[in-house]
Length: 277
Ligand SMILES: NC(=O)c1ccc[n+]([C@@H]2O[C@H](COP(=O)([O-])OP(=O)(O)OC[C@H]3O[C@@H](n4cnc5c(N)ncnc54)[C@H](O)[C@@H]3O)[C@@H](O)[C@H]2O)c1
Image 1 (tube, rainbow, N blue to C red):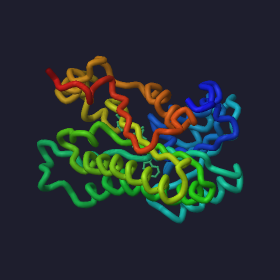
Image 2 (image 1 turned 180 degrees about the horizontal axis):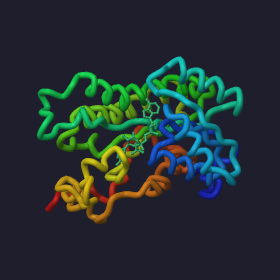
Image 3 (image 1 turned 90 degrees about the horizontal axis):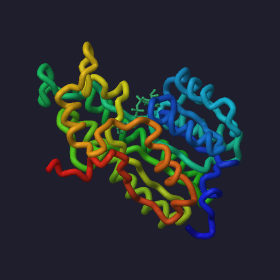
Image 4 (image 1 turned 120 degrees about the vertical axis):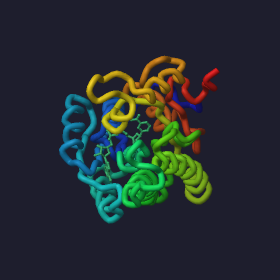
């Protein structure tokens, strides 16, 4: 690993990492992991109370943490956040594009056929996941390009490799996030600096508020047929827990991954490797 020792690579002292969707289930765990490695963590979320809850939970760590109310689809607001963070910290070293998700109305079921999925729900999911990754990458990426260094981590999904049934907009949008990850990695390295890296993680199946209604029965908590199918295709035989994302994310954000750009890393208990036979 170059001349950087492992211990130094994972010490984020003095580094500032902005995390969109940092108030959510998965990204609040990533904020915890970063803060435990002494990063300054800027938690950006449309829901300020959630962002503040994440920051409050980082108490006792070494970095200077901050909660900001930001909609990832509001470019002027993101630009304002970048300016505020640069003024406060001097630089933003990393960006996690964590805001994203599906919408129940963009999910096919007995009541909603694909043909009737409402335009506004499809647009909501497509925009949140794709443009919600592109716009912060533009705003934070500009500052990284000026400084000729930085690292961006996107959140893709199993849907990006092969779409899952029932969630067409989410599958397409996450495939677009993976594609954009590769595009941006090449663009920033070639046009601005090889020291700017862009990667993605592709989480497997984590029980969160977004997918609980698809994977477990509301009344009994038992696995739905879909939940059972996922379990049957996950060689490790369990859903992920948010902390499972920490190690790979810290690696991709750290100098330990200094020659790694443009990859989409599955963190899925083996789901994407298993043919089912
Ligand atoms: N849960 C899973 O199994 C799973 C699997 C693969 C990928 N993912 C992806 O991981 C990421 C985090 O998912 P999660 O399960 O923690 O979701 P979550 O709903 O718990 O968190 C999402 C966070 O994003 C915020 N947010 C939503 N829209 C926003 C906007 N327009 N601007 C700013 N913030 C906004 C929400 O307030 C929330 O705090 C998402 O991109 C999701 O698609 C989740």
